[in-house]
Length: 332
Image (tube, rainbow, N blue to C red; front, side, top):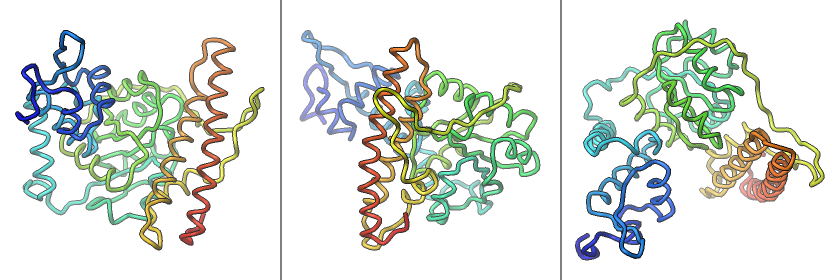
């Protein structure tokens, strides 16, 4: 590193090469989360010391293992080192308490359930004790099932996710919670984090889900929930008419997209996986746009337009996904 270091620190391009993070991500982690605090030259350019580079390398390693940058950005360097040591021990089987006892998991995640049908072995030493049920049924079951971990997709938690989480955890034996989200308001994600959930950006491959579960099992502690009785409501995406047109109809539902994110093509091509991920992200953005809080009629029209135009892009990608599925003889 010293060969590329200037007297006043490393420029951001060099830091990107040293860490594997693109400059946009480095600036975003600095601006949004305060992960590092670079010095500035007289011309305003960022300069990063060796300590900042090492810190970014550790943060990236933890994010790659399933951590949320929002949860770890403010941790001390010592805490980051400790987490990485624990993850390394877990990966090598060096921890004495891992044993052979499976981790008991409850699922409130229709998309992930479909993926597990394609790649169940990839999840490792876990036992699914509850799945395929809605929010109310899950809340009833959890007392008897006694899971170690709840994995929930954000949209499955209804319009008030943090309150739904608090309700299903109230009075139960403590268990950890992993929430997988696509697009969501920062305030809601903050409430979920305060309620004790670990947040992971989706969509996930099963190997990524496994890394997030292992990390959470090592580091998280269940927090005491607050009681709430506000009912939840599902938020399906529906076509809405406007002067700009309508939401393009979907050709792939959530379950089929989840399966295609895991399925292996006949030619070992990952294009179905990648296209399904892109379509899933666009569906999530459509939902987000339609549910976004509107200040006035002009604001509402803008968000409808965002959803409509996104759906048109999604329809194009769905056409490509259909072609790939036909070529690889995959059901769609």
